[in-house]
Image 1: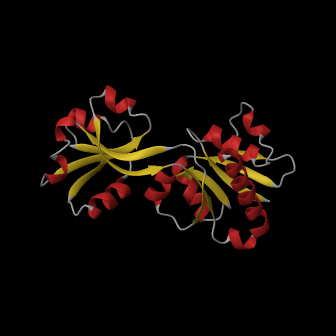
Image 2: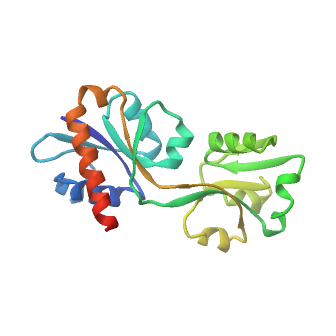
Image 3: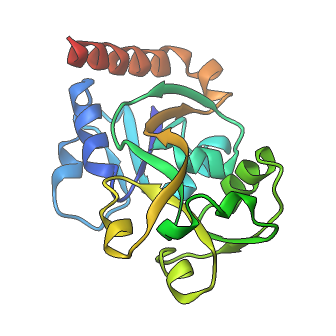
Length: 212
């Protein structure tokens, strides 16, 4: 049996469709329930529902053999695991955002405060810019940072940009595009190679069929 950790939230529905298309019977996941652990009818696959930021932890420690999670989480967590496939959904961007009047001046300021849910990504980005900043970790709506004067800019995920626009903010710089990824535990790839490679191959074949 292999265990797959699935992100609750915005990636969940598409992840269930992906696994179903790849040949797994995920019908139990489609029923209303508060359960967190599910099994395919043949009990060859266990599916564990976890908070997105916990997926890399479960996979790294081998509690889950594989997982589906956003690239943003992988960048932030920096866990030791294998990133096997770009699943091509859940596409967003990690950006620096702020007020329009800061478009040409924010990067040249001697001191900048940055509000974000992703302090490690922010630290890496600004280090690459050779810029010293104060990073303020927030767990809620980071758009409030500039609106309340807590920060000069924010680093956050943007999909349509609607939330930024409604709060008078704009994208100042794009850090990178992100999407859902399939990750695998390093040891599991050796000890359960047949099962995991079969899953990877089925998903990869399905993704290729969608392109044609």
